[in-house]
Length: 300
Image (cartoon, rainbow, N blue to C red; front, side, top):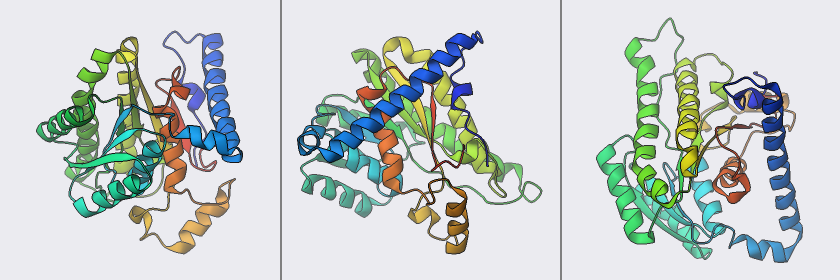
């Protein structure tokens, strides 16, 4: 498996080694502070009560949040006080279940349909969000795109490029839809859900890994262009996670992967959701263009 490249991704265009080291140290310090805060909250009931107000007044759109990582992120952000739009492409029932769960726990959410690749639909979703909640502060680009699992030799160009087209179109359209509102208020949080396969290879995943690598590059360019407007853009990169998307993977293979990981288990949606919440919060206010591997040590 690949080694961690977080520090390399923080390097400035100038190549100043001292600057690079400072940025890498700043990133690691911010993550450690955040983890320490989580530990203290879990051991202190008063801190847990305060958690609900951490994102009070913030409005989050999470694409592809009717299930898996997106659903876990929607519930967590709502639990911290954010008003959440649970976006779905086709599974309205699953999205409404997520909304119902949020509301049962005292949160505020609504389910809105839109294909993240469709500019008209996404612009409509953002307009409806602003109509309901007044603004949009957070975009979590999580919508999953189908891809073909084949060897390079057996794959056609059309099969290969479709995943990259879909991935980048969804990121482009979703980002374009929210930026005017974030620029107007001079603040915004953009979180892009990538994959560890963007950073290391695995058999039959060439179209998926390539597309996620392109997504990582896209996110960094957005971070560069809109940092001056108070907008941050960061990448959360999961390893293997227990979701319905991985349900068909043989259990023996999952156990083999878990045994390789330093933390000894496959990820859960909640693990990834916590990293998303970090980037969506003010705890990450001085981080942009960064890549965070959430893989149990798989990219170490």
